[in-house]
Each structure stands twice: as C-alpha cells, then as structure tokens.
Length: 373
Image (cartoon, rainbow, N blue to C red; front, side, top):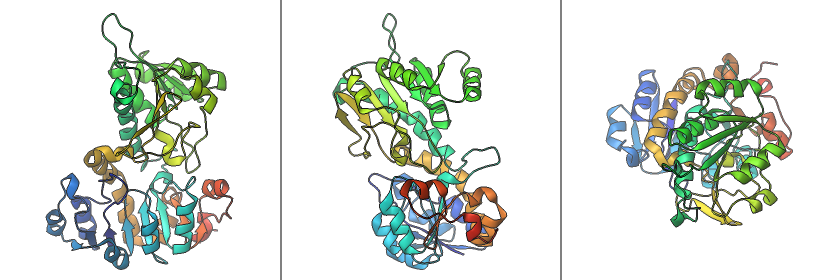
C-alpha cells in the first residue's frame, strides 16, 4: 500500500502523522510512502531522514493526497484537505466529529474511509490511541493553568503551590480519567490543593490508591460541581464521552460567580468543551476572558510539545497502521473489533453511533459496512 504523510496545517500544529522510524517499519513490511516536504522538519525530522528510510518527498499536500492510498495525519482534516480526499481513500487520524458538522459533511462528500484514533478501543474498555495525547494534555493543562494564573495573563496572581505561610491554589479537576489523572499528578506535584470530581466510585477508589491521600476525590453532582468550581482558582475540564459531544457541566451563571482572575482549562474542547463559555482557541492566542475568568481552550494542546506528542502518538498508532496496510481496511477492521470501533465515516455513511446521534444523521453500523452482519 502507498501511504501518504501530509504536513499538518492547523494553527501552530507541528506534529506529524508518521516519524521516519514509523515509515521505516511500513517500508520494511513491503509498503511505500510519500511525505510532504518539511512535514516533520519543525520537530527534528527533516526530509533527509525520511529519504534515508526509503520515503519519497513530494513538494505539496495536493500531490500526497492525489498519490496515496492511505493518508496518515494527526489532526482532523481541514476543509481544504477534505476536498482533496477521494472515494475509497483511507484517512487515519484524529477526527473529533461530534461537534464539527462541516467536517462530517466534508468526509461524507469525499467518499473516503475515515478511521478516528479517538474511538479505537482496547479489550479493557480504554482508548489506546487517545490515551497518549490525553496524558500529554492532562499534564499540559496544569502548566497552562499555572501560567494563566499569573497577573500578566489576567489571572489572580497566584503561585500554584504557594510558599511557606501562604496557602497553595485550589485546583478542581472534573473527570478522573487519563486526562484528569495526569492533571492531578502534575498539580499535586507542584504542591496545589487538588480535588477530582468523578461519578465512578470504582475510579475514585483507584485514584485514592494512586495518590495515597495527596488528592481528594468527590462524587460529581451538580451541587458538588458548583461548590468546588466557585471555590477554585483553577478548574480543569477533563470529561469524555467517547465520540460524542462533551456535556456542559459548568454553566454560564456559574462562570459569572467565579472569583476574578480564576482560570478554566477546557481539555474537552475537541469534543465541543464542557464549560458553557468555552470556544476553541489556538496556541497563537490561547486565552480569552469571560466575566473576569481566564479561559484556556486550545483545541490541539499537545501540539505545543509536538516532538514528545508525535513520538508518543506513533508508539500507539503504528501497529494499527501496519494492520490496515497489510490487510486492507476492510479485512483489518473485520479481524479486530477494537479497530472497527474507529470507523466513523465510510464511503458516504456515518458508522459511529454517537456522531450520528449528535448530528441527527442516519447511522449505519460499522459491522454492516465491513460485512460482519
């Protein structure tokens, strides 16, 4: 199979779908690769490294899309990229379709087979291709939040960990999954007063064991969310419903009652955000203020540490890329029920139920499309 790697074009996005090492693995398995010029140059993967492992460098994205049978990316295709996709072509990348009707329509129109990293599952109920970026985003949420608390950013002027004789900042993390756990690890390590809200008793028991009392856990109700959000200096939104739009857990009225200069970091912004006042921002302009509350809602947060993120992502995605290339998309999905969960759009049909539900579009089960029913 001929695999294409275009350069990412989202604002300040420097990650790349395949590293030279990953391309080498694919070529060793009998496949070929075309890579857009300078696709990985910004993070230390110059064209020469790709050429050294056998890839062909092409000068423009249009040539990569026109040539490749499978496109491997990081971020969701932008409008101009959707227009370059063609019928029967495989797209393997993050999609986050639920809140993005325009992208969904673009993929439907293209006739491509779109496999989303974020909905591929594992045998333990996890999301293995989302997990590495969730780890990065969770850790970065605290870095970003700590910076946003500084006066120059419009924050309260608080040091996250305080100093002897001065209390640390209060941090509330809504959601105890991969993002929330990594955020809590960073915040607690910096000395903050950390509380995690979650609705799973089992997960809170696990968190209690992990943190050994250094982080508090509270069952998430509307009352609990309101109480802790209003008392916090920094709130991290870390909720996830796989493939679906994020629930709005913090209302506009609640934001208006928060302390002046407090900070909201919405890691769920790719799925529409979990704060009523959230809107996607970029690394170029990462924050804005509503009711004197600083909002950090960067939609590609891990792109800020693009080299670390690319390496972590490739560790997770390469095995599935090899399976798709070796077997073809239909057989690879038929053989692996977890990879099958990644199929979101296929030849003009929506094959992920949560996306179809959120956008009120007809749903066709992925199993039906690959001939399993």
